[in-house]
Amino acid sequence: MRLGLAGKEMSCHQTRQWLDAYFDGELDLVRTLEFEEHLKDCGECRDARDGYDTLRQSLQTPGVYHKAPEALQQKIRTHLRHATAVHQMPSTFAASPAWRLLAAAASIAIVVIVTALSVEWARSHSSKEILAQQVVSSHIRSLLADHLTDVPSSDQHTVKPWFNGKLDFAPDVKDLAGEGFPLAGGRLDYLDHHRVAALVYKRRQHTINLFVWPTSGSDSRPETVALDGYNIVHWNRSGMTYWAVSDLNARELRIFADDLHP
Amino acid sequence: MAAFEATVLPHINAAYNLARWLTRNQQDAEDVVQESYLRALRAFDTFQAGRDGRAWLLAIVRNTCYTWLNKNRARDMYPLNAEDAQLTASTHLDPETQLMDKAAAERIRGAVADIGAEYREVLILREFEGLSYKEIAQIVGAPLGTVMSRLSRARKELQTRLCASAWQAKK
Image (cartoon, rainbow over all chains, first blue to last red; front, side):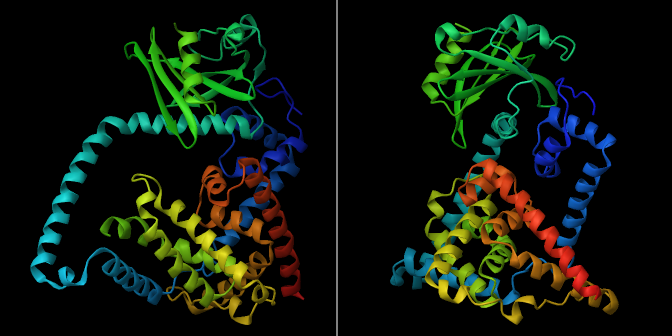
């Protein structure tokens, strides 16, 4: 038994519970480190992990995966062509070679335009999109591993100093109990290649993760996005970037952001 | 049509593999995959560009499989047919390795096919397709925690079955 980063002992029982999440790379950073720390000392848990390795290798044995028969792909192509021809074009138009030529030219033009537009769009949006996706994943992971907080406390004066020495910046920690968003605690997380502060707030039964880390970007107004059924509000303030994520409705999440930085 | 083909046709192996494990029969799997592609085509206007076409297609394949199994439940109650354990020969390996692999693969296929359907499907999606818990949760329509516990149970059952069959093979 050793002390984990969160100051808790990780037992074999817990390790076994998280074995699958660890093995599948779905465990959060702090728990992963604790898990590996435990493996160093515990032969039985190492055996359990090795057992999973062996199992995965067995499933990779050639001939286990069912590859689609080659004829099937051809059959499906033919079916699809038939289905679309019947659905989309009246047969007199479809039969006319001139119409086909025109349709082909038009579809090429559309593809060119759409590609040009989407490349441009992707250039400006991709990094933020990827980050938003990471924010949602971290939020889900924190709920999944039952590891919402490393420091469970509703007292901002307990949560803020807890980050000392764990981060190279000091996040601003505010309790918003008066506004209906009580602080539930804080934890370390990893986003966009940084160690970041994750502050946890509650709103009724909903959990809000607020991720904070330094940025060189200038102040920006809160922006709301929805992703996979979660709402995200993102803004920059005084050299820090803020990402709030929750299954709470977008309106209340926006109020949360405004209460934090009026 | 070009966008549809580019988005979903490359995933035909994933579609077939899942259908094959869920129906446990080659002919049925082929029918289910064909039906799934037609359903996917009809639903393609609901597909959001930029999303993962594979996860989207697999959700349709899974639904088609279960609709199909419901209709033919009586047949699914029969024991696995001998054909189920047959293998497509891997031609690029030398004959000896091929023979050993073939016996091992047959054993593993038998063990996976014996696991309960709700455990089998999460195992297939995770181990063969490498999907994340979130993607699997969306496909099977269950919470993340359920996906994790089903996966854990699937692995333990598979380990037990493989141990038992290895012991049988040695006898």
